[in-house]
Image (cartoon, rainbow over all chains, first blue to last red; front, side, top):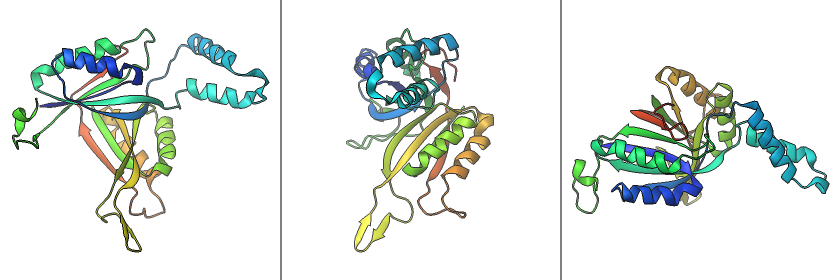
Amino acid sequence: MKEIMAVVRMKKTGATKKALVAAGVAGFTAVKVSGRGRLVTDPARIEECREKLLSMSNDDSGEKQDTEQVVTSFLDGSRFFPRRLFTILAHDDDVPRIVEAITNVNRTEHGIGDGAIFVMQILDAVRVRTGESGEAAIW
Amino acid sequence: MLLIRAIVRPEKKDDVLAELSSAGFNAATMVDVVGRGKQKGIRIGGMVYDEIPKTLILVAIQDADKDKVVKTILKTAKTGSDGTFGDGKIFVSPIEEVYTISKGAPIL
């Protein structure tokens, strides 16, 4: 038995759920979390993003410094972004299939911030309704 | 690889995360949770509060970094010189596989 913890974009929650159903795994637990990960290291890309964000700001608000501070915090990796944490219990054999399904729907062209998947060993599981335990308790 | 789950006071989470970041562990996930400890919650007057708000911080790390991360969290999440009830807990569990979705590869 394995526990798969997947952190995905909020926007991809629906797609992930569909992909899980298609992979034959209907049951999951999801929590709203906030997360941060690896930083973009390409300075050209950061600068491009920064200019884009700054150009969106309201020039005559007189809070240019605040805006810059917010924009910088977006790009230096110190800010947490909303994400969804899926917890899925799976039989050992199904893990590669599920990981692939989640990876496929969650990859974006941004190349960063798409989340992470952790796979952990589970020692036992019990279905409350029937009291059955072990592999039988997982769908 | 290891998954560190640290339950800390919500007012301490910024300190802990900043300290982790400067120690080189920028990636983290956090969840607002409620819980109680072995003191069975807090009794104020006749009222028992046993759903005390805490923040759960998840950090995935390499095995070799365990001591560093645990020490960092222990140091920053503690309140007072001797610590106080309610400062939280740290759980460490092994991860078998890690996938970074944007890379599409099994790397941390």
